[in-house]
Length: 173
Image 1 (cartoon, one colour):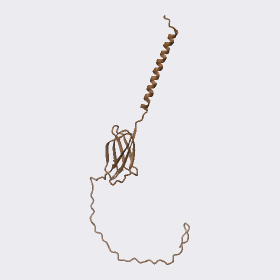
Image 2 (cartoon, rainbow, N blue to C red; image 1 turned 45 degrees about the vertical axis):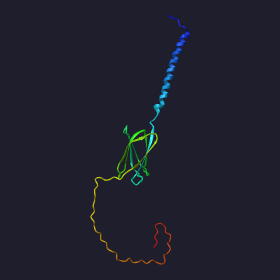
Image 3 (cartoon, rainbow, N blue to C red; image 1 turned 120 degrees about the vertical axis):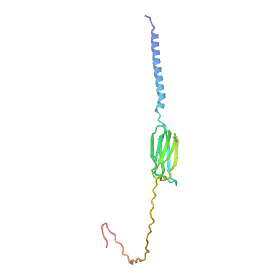
Image 4 (cartoon, one colour; image 1 turned 60 degrees about the vertical axis):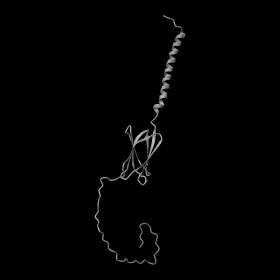
């Protein structure tokens, strides 16, 4: 058996404690440095769409859809009374579609949404009805009779009696 002085044993224990503490501190520093990266939410952008007809009048109630190119997620909105709608979207590329009954559908691919405000003005064209049905109305002659009778004049009284105040349900004869 070999004899070890007490200070060497204490020194070995101290070195072990320092190594374990250093490892714990390093693990905590790494964990804390990764937290902000893991806690970040995807950045959002805003897409504003103004829908107008051919005359420049706003179209309220138009349906707007933004479909994410990568994920296929669909975000929808409806224009307000001023023809505007806003979509809060995650950064990325989208296909933008706009439709309203009586108008041709409109779409734009590769609309890039980033952290800045993206605005699109959309003009919808009237729908040209392809399978149109033409209805012809025969020309029916209308007969008109000239008015020859005279309307008699109704005499108005010279004196109109003063109206009496009435209560609800009362009659004045």
